[in-house]
Image (tube, rainbow, N blue to C red; front, side, top):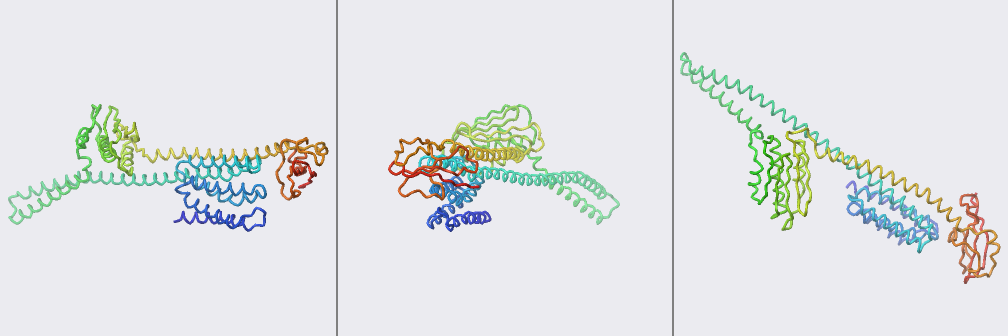
Length: 491
């Protein structure tokens, strides 16, 4: 419920700017039907982002591209800003919730390529393509990278809580083991004293000087002491049941399974009791899993001299059952308890369970420790990747935008001599003009009626005080009808 409220609040924040883009007086403001459409798209994206992050990211990217590209020729600022928060938030959530980042990365790539192609062929040209690239980089790629980092960090927190739970359980196990040990010592001490008391009372029972009543009392006391000793022995038998219970051999486990199993037992020396119990547990659980998930498959059980146990089954001739995976988790925990290594996974169309056990139980190394180390390595890698992506996007914008401004100015310069030689009513093909124009339609400049105008740089430096000055040549039916210098100083 908390996650739903959080997404609702984020949607409201993103929606507020979309509504503001309709209330503004700018020429590119949104129509009411556009506001409704964009809000509906964003609502869908925010609802499905947890389960379908790539779909949500694709919807947000598509909405932002449409909003920008439709308005780029008359009000690009509104097109960029209206859906900017929505795209940034969706990108972060998509990176946060995507288990596999490839689908969301593909969505970003497709949006980038599609936006650049549309910009170059239909909307504004290279300057629009650069704006699309920068916008998707800042509003899409960077938040997505931070979302991936946040996911790794959350996984590390989860592993930390699991580790704390295991430590608490280990402490409980240690306390229980100590209590069992103390109980054993109490049995040895108290049992000895009870036996001695029973012996003394029995001797007293045979004393000839006692009366019949006293002898009967001694007999009753001896019986009570003997019964107490027997009850104590029964209690200790329960406490030590695991230690006294005989361990089935690997051959017995295979035989009890009732399966057609090829057994290869290369272990010729005796196995430690605790390790033998672990071999028993792994083999029994693995064979049970074969019965459930690959009935009828060929099975091989191999126990090597170095206590490496492998249970392999071939492809299942029948449709396998769907399992929870808890059995394998339990096996991994059991093997880790004695200091072994556990692995399980597909092999040659079937499945294989592998356990490498030590000769004697070793200090505990749980799967949580291994997962914690792996997650820590992943979060470090994710942090480096996030910094690298952010730095690359910022560097590309910092270098690309000024670079493009220089390129745009240098390649579209119309010299004063060329401007002076341009005679009215001259055919466009007969004029000495640059190959590129500076901009298509500068804001605040009205073109003559029924004329198509070209705008050119007055000089090659796009950063000085005269950077907005332009030469304008207007044509009607491919003949020059108007020319002027637009002095648009910004200070």
